[in-house]
Amino acid sequence: MKCSSSVLAAAAGMMATASAHGFITSPQARLAGSAMKAACGTQVYNQQASDNYGNIQGELQVAATQTDYNAAECNIWLCKGFKYSDNTANVQTWTAGQVVDFTFDVRAPHTGYANVSIVNTATNTIIGDQLLYYSDFADNAKPIPANETSFSITIPSDLGDSCSTAGSCVVQHYWNAASINQTYESCVDFVVRGLGSGPSSSYFTVATPLSSSRVTTSTSAPVPTIPITLSSAVPTTLQTTVSSASSTSVPVAAAASSTPYDGEYTC
Image (tube, rainbow, N blue to C red; front, side, top):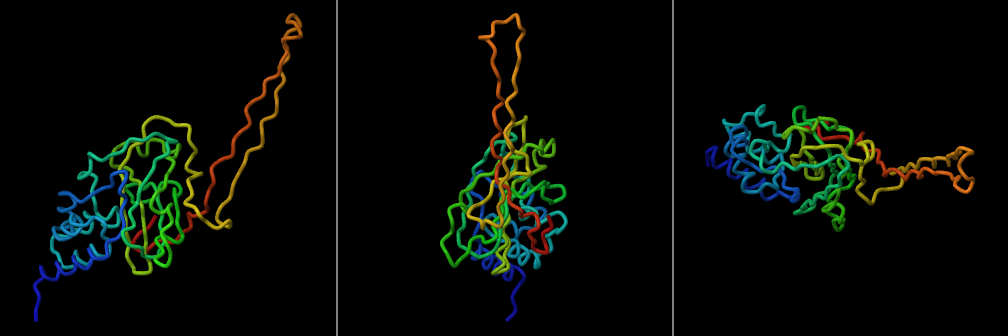
């Protein structure tokens, strides 16, 4: 029996949808729209518009049968091909040092690794360090830890003007479910306005629990007391000393930048 390309595409779309299992639900992440449809093709768009939890391999399976899939324009390994121009109403405005809460829905677990990073959309590369890293994510052999579905990130204070223009940066959740060879990406568009007092991107929120061998802490030495001598014309009862406040410990840092990536995705 012979099958038409449309039937094959529909079947591929159904298989991909059946295995769709992860997406950022808050803040609002990029969704499929007309710009994605024009770049990635009607069937790829239809698949993701019906279920935005789908994986990249499922999209590519559908795209392989389509003549309207433009690989360069789709750029499917950046936010699964979802476009900024379809999501201009969903751009978040944050400040440096701001702590932002995220919710991620693991619809069904598939063991792999994951990271949360700020990505330059022009080059599809991570800016600075990963903000979060999970060496064992959505492990289907155990209950899903709370910090895999609800977590916070701190907006780095040394981004400069890299993320001052809407569409130039996204916070991307990247989940490589290596156990089933499926990759899930979801992206939140944002801009940074003004200056904050938060930590630089060298220090970032760590998804716990992690083994002690992966976590280091650093504490600055206290600033010494500095005596101030007043003029002899001033009564001695007014002489005093001023002590600078001791510095607080800096946030925990994790050494995760050397984490390998899927061959199709380079950060």
